[in-house]
Image (cartoon, rainbow, N blue to C red; front, side, top):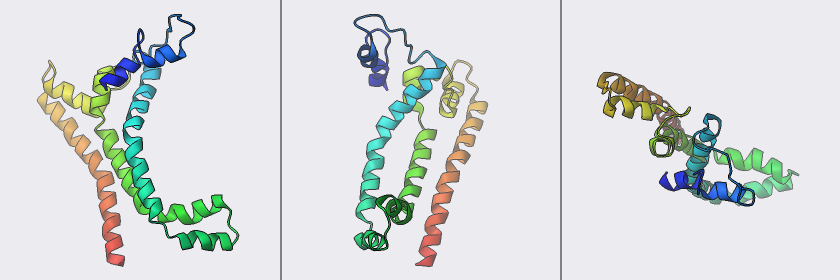
Length: 173
């Protein structure tokens, strides 16, 4: 988060320097503009998660039986049809795992948002509100705890969906 904050800095940030015009001052305020800071944090979060997700997809693609692709080719399917009608359905368990992990990571995206923007300018996440209410100057522990329970319930929904799918798969086997 700190490195990304430095990269987005108005005065000496890497991104500002790269898109600047011949030493002129660039007036793009990446973190202060409510329309841009959401995209800046999304790039940060994507950068953090994309490697892990790609490793999971690579493992899933290695597990796809090559005879399925050969059969699709023999049946006259194009590479695009082979992917969408053969490979992608085989990757369903991997897709479910990635969706669950992504939802959980997005719900706990506290560190990037808090370090980069302080949870201001349109990025008032539930986790930031919990921290501000429990630890902040107002110290509204009751409201912060209630928000924590809401975050827990929201987190349990994709986890429960994943567990139900796994239990159904085990019952079929």
